[in-house]
Length: 392
Ligand SMILES: *Cc1c(COP(=O)(O)O)cnc(C)c1O
Image 1 (cartoon, rainbow, N blue to C red):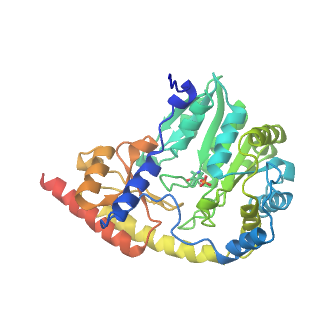
Image 2 (cartoon, rainbow, N blue to C red):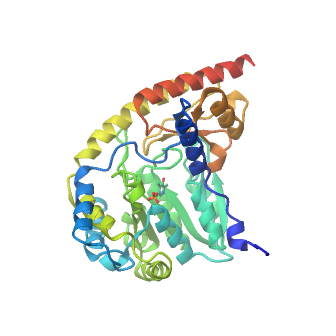
Image 3 (spheres, rainbow, N blue to C red):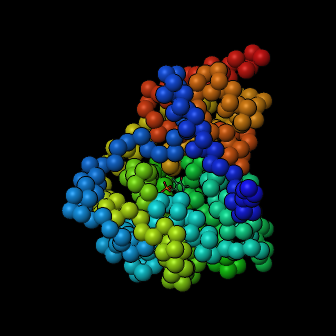
């Protein structure tokens, strides 16, 4: 049998973050005392009222197909969220509910990009973006940034990267993996260039609510009608409501793009899970009290980890004002990220994600979506590891 894999699928690399997470979980299951900094999800439970709403829908038999882009009630609640929190006016028909924010991103790229198109992606990037671009047969164009600029691309860098083939610019603020947050002025400067050059923007705002040190989030779509018309905003329930396993994301797009995405979903996934959508309605329309507590907890861990990392020989870590990640520079240890992480896991049983997965080989990603005691234990072990490296 000739198991020829399609060019499209063969071009993809599997998700390294999911792989590391799986390896750490396996080591834990084998009885080893592993500290996992690999998590890409909050360690808090989904708020009870959200679970109750989904359970009630399930019990009431809300278990059949829904419209492929989501139930009207949820699309309406999402449109209201954009109006209320971002000052963005969308009709329900411009809102698409997908099977996770990842699915939303993928469908945006599939609906707008094709062979010959270039997609500009700032690095360090969320590792799925370039793979999704390849899936669409388009070409990722990576803009390197470092901790010297808090991992932000400059307007000059963006301008210089745009060619007649540029179709889409991907902006992710607050960022996974760096936790970096663009100021409203910085967002506007990048948006202005895209508007001037006619480049679409996919703005992944899934960490919108996870901000510290007084950082502010402003959607690039909100600066003018032109920005609004040129932007697709991607969002989801995974992070701020801790609903990763529910597989629910959403997007807001200009009507023709929303229609194309609806067509893609109608022939691939059909609707996101029916009763999960009822939970999502409760997430948007119910109390948001949980977030205050989570942010206080995340912030405490973030401060501790940031300070501790900077006290470890060979490591320096710039401040990160969003999401739940730090992205320390390990260049001073003399190791590249893959060797650093595999030796760290081997020697000290600490799982972190090598920066190379995000296009930045001198860094590792530390998720502080784990308990304070785990963070203390894990960072002590990283310190041991680095001291042993320094001794040679
Ligand atoms: C977590 C995440 C998403 C979406 O995750 P889902 O679980 O698919 O909802 C999207 N973008 C970024 C940058 C993320 O970190």
